Length: 156
Ligand code: SF4
Image 1 (cartoon, protein in one colour):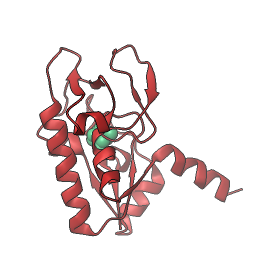
Image 2: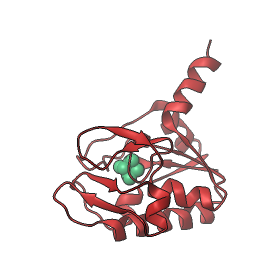
Image 3: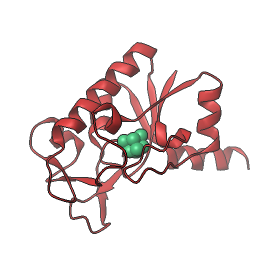
Image 4: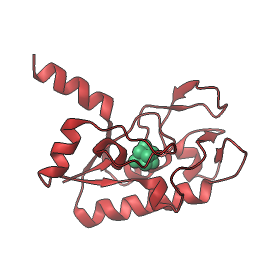
């Protein structure tokens, strides 16, 4: 069993109330092989919501209390992001997930890249808060982009 970002399944749970649906992810969920989760909604944030970025580090630093998650109006939403990460970990444990496919560049779900905290669309290496927590608990996290590349090379 896997967990997947709900926006990749087609749920309009992004900050701007859009989704990032990918057919193969929909298929996984449809076949009962994956469960969709949205850490930011599970942390109590509404949809739509203000876009947020990690300021001062990445998801690991947030878990260690060395960085914060701030929305573009300057509100501190660190607590909600942490709550969402722990709720997602709980869900992963309940369904026995050992792997997660999560949305790249999200401050929750990013697994290689995140926005750099300047709200200028610039990116940096690092992972989101949920990804950091899942990895600390032995759950493998890959991005949907890696998944897509793998599918493309498999079909060649
Ligand atoms: Fe998608 Fe994750 Fe953002 Fe929710 S928190 S909208 S699942 S990227």
